[in-house]
Image (cartoon, rainbow, N blue to C red; front, side, top):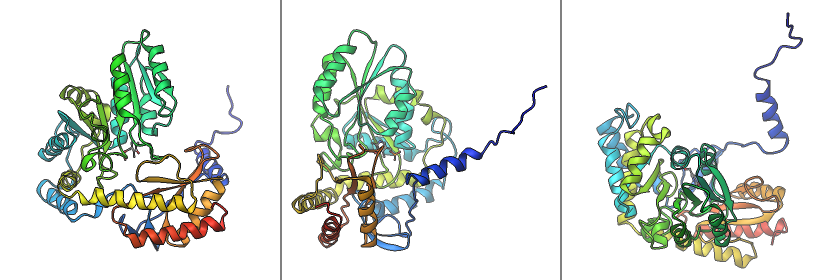
Length: 399
Ligand SMILES: *Cc1c(COP(=O)(O)O)cnc(C)c1O
């Protein structure tokens, strides 16, 4: 007879592993907003200037989005009742998809529950055994998870390095059935932009499919915030433009835009789409209003960029290193992770909310404060923030 000397403790690892994170200062301390996400937010009971939300255009507080959400809830109720494929496709879901395709200047579009659900649901359907997926080395975690779900081989090219991408393509050309090139559009840690025009050109030479995750580009780059296709004037030439309503659009929801063939394939095959409930009507109402606002009120994108240019220029002239950023994501590179955390804490104490990004999200010696610009911040707010960055940067010998 087998005897168990010490009985297995099923749940002990939960506390052990959490304690380990705390010991290494790697745990997430959740901060509570009591105000909604606004340019001036109440965070953990204190008013601060918001410099780390993804609400670039401040649309989450726009009266037209709030009205759109309320009216859709009144008309269609609080929930959708089902998954899209069975009884959960409301007319308002299809209205968003039509309006979005028009906005993105593509033949068609499809809404997923989140951007994460789009990447993890669609990527594993596009490639399988006998195929290869080629990724930029700095791609977002949701792409990485999507790729992990495929049975395809994987290769990585050096960040934004077209010579290296060409090398991988040449190497893969004869060996595989399908080749999928996948990249972030705007990279979320450095704020630089993938050279999508060149990627599309290379892909065409090799008959490869292109997939761009434009989560930080939509509402931000390209004419009226139409995203990376518009930015490079290659609309309709990227096979899959994936994005999200959770950032500049100020709501929530994943999306893909491309051909009708892509959309028909995607909704029939993506398990995240088929097996998970569809958006509450209020979400769709706010999404429709967000597209409306982008099409009719160009001032938000303009203000975002005016703010971005001013803030970046002033940070640089103070002597801060803002890396390769070309977008409203402006990293303030500090180097040492302890120093980055200290700077973030002191900024909060002084009324500026911006969080540190440290290893493993960025290299060990590239710890930083990642600032994200907001169109709702005034020149006075920016000067206030710059003043604090200058004072604390000097205190901590960063500048
Ligand atoms: C935020 C983000 C996502 C996930 O989008 P959600 O709609 O919030 O799930 C995907 N990719 C990138 C690059 C992102 O920054």
